[in-house]
Structures are given as structure tokens and as C-alpha cells.
Image (cartoon, rainbow, N blue to C red; front, top):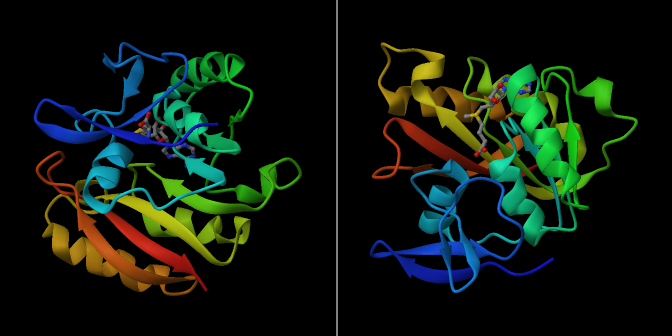
Length: 202
Ligand SMILES: C[S@@+](CC[C@H](N)C(=O)[O-])C[C@H]1O[C@@H](n2cnc3c(N)ncnc32)[C@H](O)[C@@H]1O
């Protein structure tokens, strides 16, 4: 486990980690560049700074690249991904990392992985599908009171016709069942119509 270190890359201060490459990511000073145009979590880190985490539940693990960076910097990362093709690669990436645990399940049914996913102090979500607040609410049981959640909201996944700000407001309201929303971090200029809702578990 190592800390995030910041490096200048393409004129932007970007997070870097040490660890084995998982994709074709650039390397600076022998460190993996976590590029804000390739990862929404990296974009959020560039805009918000590193919030700190020890154990992470990562919903929407994709092919494992994002989770691999988190695994470089955390004690344990549980990465949930339900689509067969990316999940296959996620499992391969996890084979090279002791702290990355793939969970090939549907994040809308968190009770399925209750027996093997422990409580965490940080929830990161990037599922990019309709019902993003529902997924975060369903998984709130994995967070202790006072823990942090960063929930990426792709506005167009909720409603292609709505103004992104209206979508973020709706998500904020829905999250109120389980979370206190601390802020809405627009991911421009790295991603259009995406924001990360930063929240604290009630
Ligand atoms: C934008 S990609 C995530 C990319 C990843 N964050 C990265 O940086 O490498 C969104 C992923 O969420 C997954 N996903 C969407 N809904 C899901 C659900 N209900 N349960 C598990 N995975 C889901 C999709 O299959 C897709 O692979």
C-alpha cells in the first residue's frame, strides 16, 4: 500500500500510484499516472484532492483499471461488476493484486455479497446506469455512520433530455435517505455532464 503522489503530466497535476500496470497507462518516474481524462475517479481527485481511504467498496468496477489504482493505495478494495466481459478482465487484474477483491454480482442486490464483503470506510460508485441514487442507497449498509461516499452521476444515464443540474439535484434528494450530501463536483473539463456527489453516511 502506498500513498498517492502528485506529478505534473500534460500540464495538469495528476495523481500517481505505484503498482503493476493494469492497462496501457502512462508512467512517470516509474509511477502509474491516474489520468483524469481516463478515469472519473482521477478527475474527482484532481478537483477535490485525496479524501483518504482504507477499505473501499467500488461499485461499477468495469475491467478493473480504476479499482487497480485504488488497490495501490488501500488496504482492501471490493470491486462489484456484473457485466460478463469487463468482469472477466477485472478478475484477471485482481489476480495480480492481493488487496483487490472482484465481486461479480449486481450492485442493485447487495444482500448477495453480504457474506464476503466487509464494512468499508469509503464507497466509490461509477455504474453509469439509470437509478444511480438507488444503487448508492442499497449499498449504504456497507458504510459506517460518518464514512464517505463519492457517487459519480452520469446525467444522461438518468434522463437524456434533462438539464444535468436538475438530475444532480434529484440524486441529492434521493440520497437524503442515507447520506448527507457535502457537495456536487462537476467533472468538467475532463467529462461533460458528469458530477461526483460527495456525501457522508448518516
Ligand atoms: C463507466 S464503467 C466503470 C469504469 C471503471 N470505474 C473504471 O474506471 O475502470 C461502469 C460499469 O458499471 C457496471 N455496472 C452498471 N450497473 C451495474 C450494476 N447494477 N452492478 C454491477 N455493475 C454495474 C457496467 O457494467 C460498467 O462496466
